[in-house]
Image 1 (cartoon, rainbow, N blue to C red):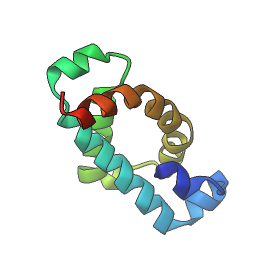
Image 2: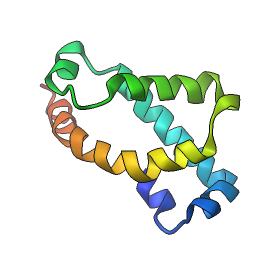
Image 3: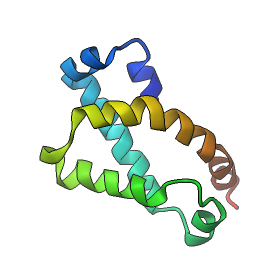
Length: 99
């Protein structure tokens, strides 16, 4: 979903669009919160997924929003989210199957 919010934007357009920045931040917050709900066994099975980083980002967005760097949010959305999606696919399949 994040990718669809920013697919036609340059970094400057993103930084000038508060509504889109808020939407991306909210999605990152949701991802971070969901990462906190993943059990230890699954985290151990997929060590390449940055579980702690996702949780920390969620905490910054939720509690230290005045320290958010919009350029960093852009970098996460454009470079880290696409890679993260690929890593998360098998986890989503497992969780979706209720295993």
